[in-house]
Length: 349
Length: 257
Image (cartoon, rainbow over all chains, first blue to last red; front, side, top):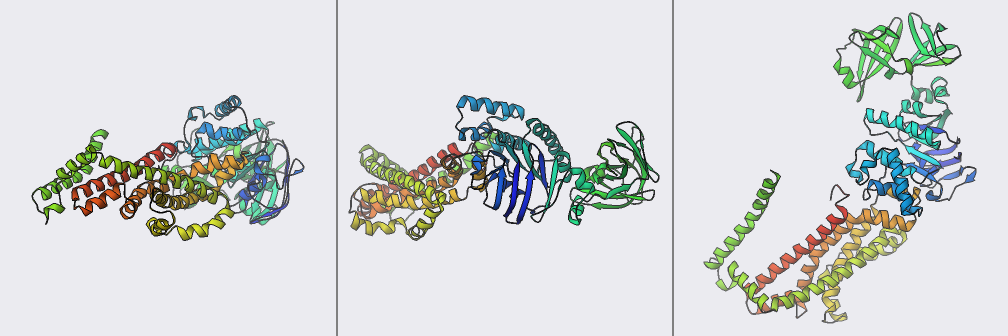
């Protein structure tokens, strides 16, 4: 699978972009809405004109039509052909290549089986749910066996559970296919979960390209740091290796057990979504749990942010509105604070 | 339950028609309208309908009109779709033809009649040409709009999947423009009958329109009414045929059709 290289590429908001996407990697482009993420995918696919040069496997593809770039593209709006059935949508690219009917049927059936949409074969797109449409669109983009896969916010507009499930499946699939993938999202957690490397783009400029860990702990400038925005960074006073896979870190009066794979730990970072709070004592072992006081409650469209004080530290927790409303939590109240073990991140010295 | 509601709705829709016929019959039969010769009852109109059918006059004239409509509408629609597709697909063609189409489209089809009488003469080609013109321009307009309005993302998707321009046109763009194309066809299907009758009344000695003009000179209101009923039914029927064709071709995939 090929390497993709953009050299001094400009289009719309994007100016003088220089990006190298390595063989077989899952390269995530993240950034706020309108930052130029989709434009980069359109440039690689060749569905838009641009200034600069694009190389796929060291071959300059400027002027090469989209169909000859061997790229699979999952559009943000999916662009499933409404007048074709699921089967015909997936078969479209194979027919375009002039494949024989028997081979088309075999390939489409195997893709439908892989994406678990075989039962939807005769349906039209308007008869499908959001998640089903995404699967069909993914199968369609994979059908002609592309060497590059471009995914534009593939889990957007899905409910949280479906998005999580589809994301998991997609990671497995991409690892299995070993295909060079460019994945656009504005969800930081999704980027971290799926990426080999992340490019943060803002106002059409690449701010940083690095591994997810580097992006979180070594933001190269203010803009990255603001976007990553990890408010719960805790300095560690001491750490003790418990087993080869676990370490105990101490920060003042807080003691936490973390997954460990070597190095000295100086700081840990906890995403607000990974701090759970409860008004009643939760069952289970008292691991990574503390008592905290609710200082401030702020409601947003889809979540509630709760500022907590525990000892001399302030933590920020984020809960889904439904989960928050089920509990009896108000400012000034003492609550149980739990930190999800596997989501803790740490910085090695 | 659903059937019962359906029957009730049908009855509710049929009721005004039945009432209309009953009032018509009463007014005609009891001379409630000034001048009985000018307002025959519904039953007299139906009797005339039977007589005209039995002696073959209605059939002969109807067949003349139907042939003209079919040839004119078919020719105008095919040409309209063809030109509309090219205009919608090729920007340069659209740029070149658009001013001419924009200038000619607003002219009412019957406005061409005096000119065509001089150019073509009074023969079978005259009403056919009028219907051709009547169908052509609106179908061009709707087809061009339909083709141009196809979402670019479908075209990009087809391109990245390796489709050729011809495949994109025939497998993506035209099918997606069908709802718009059918809107033009459906409207013109009914309109062509209206235009034909007017043309026949003015210039052609055969057909339903000509029969109406002959009836008028003989003060045969019943015959005029028979012709109007035939015209009304044919307008509705032609529009319905295109609506059914649209449902058959587009209804399966369009949730709005």
